[in-house]
Image 1 (cartoon, rainbow, N blue to C red):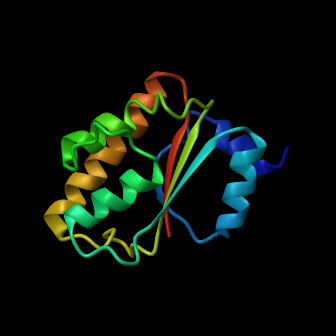
Image 2 (cartoon, rainbow, N blue to C red):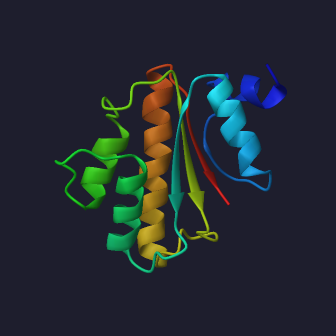
Amino acid sequence: MNDLSLRLKDIEEVGVYTINCELSDVRSAANEVGFTVFDADLASVQSKSEFLAVVAQAIDAPEWFGKNWDALADALGDLAWKPAPGYVLVLRNGLNTFNLLESDHEIAKEILDNTVSYWKMQHKPFWVFSC
């Protein structure tokens, strides 16, 4: 098991990070430890609704997903349809704001931070990497 795989399993290090490493390294390490990787390409995102749609598609959200911030928080805090020992959400091509207005970016960031904290309390790693 490589260093990145070991770090992904470390519940104390989980969080929302901007990374510069190769995504293939992250994917390989996550696969090595059996984590589910969600890959959201934000290149075409220009609004809250587009961000929600791209993330919902990446996590294969269930039909009940309501396309609002509460639904995103609920879905990321559930993931019963994707059982795994841990999760990695990759947000690609979103610059530093996930291509959102400042107010929406703050809400999205808060939801992601809360999701990481929730899963940490469940002793399950949940990582968010933006690049």
